[in-house]
Length: 250
Image (cartoon, rainbow, N blue to C red; front, side, top):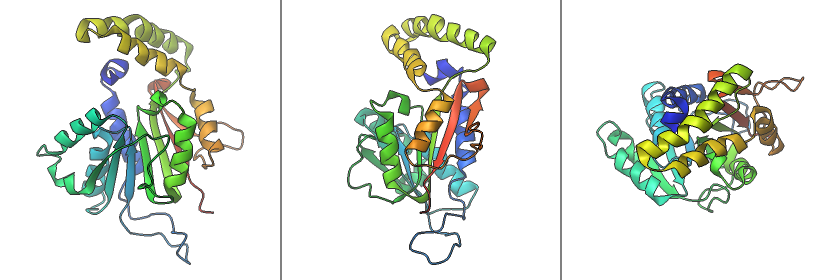
């Protein structure tokens, strides 16, 4: 489905998303238990939500290992759908991903109410890509993200969004509502699921509203000016957007 909505570009977006987070970098925010303000060098604990197939998790560990020479950081892959987790586990056995297997764990869980095994202030990086628009309560998921992240930890979201250019938006909506369900019927014999896809994107908050919800959950929003502008990164004119929030140190 992501292939149709992004014409296959979602793979490049995911690559860019992970690069922008630079997982495994040596500079972590100072721990509240430390007396100094010096950065830490301990491994990252990352939580990838709605990440059952492993797309983001594999990228996170690949970047940490190959770019930052970090062989210790780990990722918890969480998804509410056990079939998606099974698919991710199977992929992790492939030769290119097998070295990362010991640093991956798989958790069937609801992001709106994470289990006690994900403790308060235990996660350095929380990611969710092309999943949060499907949550019953995205705001509940934001509150849980805030709970489990360490002070200084980062919430990062990649999601389909709103195209602001009127001409591009008209073309995109014609493609989304006119072509996607028909293609879904022809290719997969499933018009309803593809119709739901485009409708879920339409219902999800636009960039400014979603940025404000992240801030309302208690996060600091990087890039947001005093004039209330900015605070996200548009991809392909707003077809998708990256939002981030940082849990305050105090």
